[in-house]
Image 1: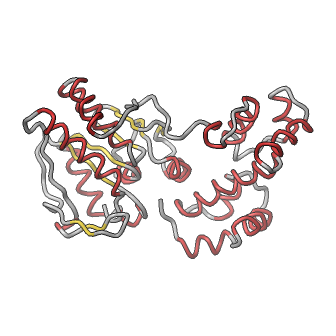
Image 2: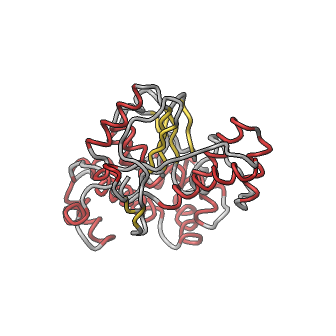
Image 3: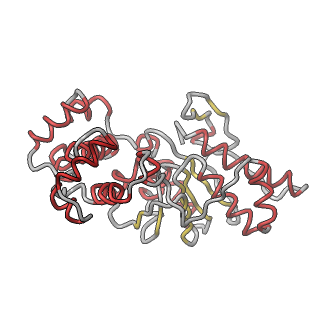
Amino acid sequence: MNEFTLLCFAAAIESLRLANRMAGKELYQWVTAGADGEPVTCSVGTSFSVDIGFEDIFRDDVLVVCGGTNVKSATTPKLLNWLRRESRRGVLVGGLCTAAHTLAKAGLLDGRRATIHWENQDGFIEDFEDIELTRSVFVIDNNRFTTAGGTASIDLMLKFIGQDHGAELANAVADQLIYSSIRTDQDAQRLSVPTRIGVRHPKLSQVIHMMEANIEEPISPSALAENVGMSTRQLERLFRRYLDRSPKRYYMELRLQKARNLLMQTDMSVINVALACGFASPSHFSKCYRSHYETTPYRERGTQGPSA
């Protein structure tokens, strides 16, 4: 797709190339496809020639869609029609990075489990409520697969290589890639809370987990403190000591971050974004948003437009 993420594309192709090299024979072949066979621009602005246009492929082929930035504008009717046609012919179809959005738009993930980059999950959930979204690095559900993007392409390809030709070859490919920790579909995308915030304090991690899980209906600081067996004052001191901000401020930043994701990734109205992020009124939401991002939600939507 136009503006595809270069890293996840290269990680997938290189894994297959190394499988051929380590096996000493051609186990995998690939061709690149794009609309009308025209060059496609990647996420860093470089143009890539493709081998074919949206042509019929063989039933025993695997169709891998590589997404990236501005996935909504790159999800064209022509691409959707091609994906639907090929899926009806029984082709195994998957998406790397934000291409899960495109597969979902084509109806190819209905009734299935899927994943997408953590930054795009809020928008995906709003657009496709009936798809079971996970936070795994990759998901394989029957004849569909999706990845979170980035190096998750390596984990997915190592999974396929291991299934096709054994764990020994998959491990040899990982060694060639200097990839010392192979993840499975049970591994989460994001670093743990303690790693992300640089603090290993169990009660602080518990509170942050609760905050992240309750954005639409925020929990009061007193209730958060009670849930971890602390007083409100102790919780305040804990946040001040380790994060240099109050619990209320940290919670607000989480809610505003989700709001920004929804504004930039979905077509939700500003009012609905406000409600989804726990704000009782659009005016309060706009005031908080302006204070944090130095622009209003309406201007953010107007200048950026919806993209994933």
